[in-house]
Length: 244
Image (cartoon, rainbow, N blue to C red; front, side, top):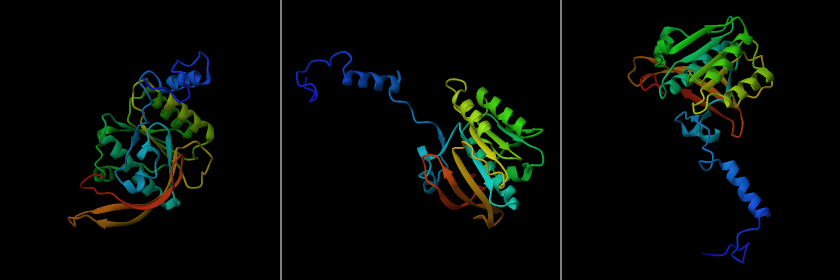
């Protein structure tokens, strides 16, 4: 048996010594199964973006904020959120919940088909206001029964409801994977909150697909804020044939 340079006698550290306390602390932090597993993420499949995000994708559980660059870009922002929803549903089972405050843009059948989204996997809740949207999202987070939660807000995400969503994401059913949580709000409702990322989205001219038969939607997406990551600006195109 080799000698520890910090313990040249080869004896075990004395009970209560700094080395022993540090080892015990590391064991407690790592838990019974060794070091904690990294939090689950949704990879976008685009290294140019995933490398800007901690863990290589959008963290599952905490809310992500999506904002139109201008009021006229509200439909584009919704399309961007639904594209992320489609990516998450493609790798999971279950349905997505869309909880919408009054007078918010809502998905329609033709647009869903272009994103490869089966309408039977979408649950639409037309709420009476932002407070009802928050209650629905919080309850769904605690239940851990749905892989995607989308909130369409009229007045934005204040700090307190954002914190409640974060706590609900951390305290859901044990062993269940947390959902992808997306919050859409108007451009003027710029309130401080605890969202993990903030995306500003604008529409961009569509392009014809490789078959020349259908337009592929495009977005200008700016990662304006990213906790433990880096911002960026990209022109993104949805491939309706490959659904990515």
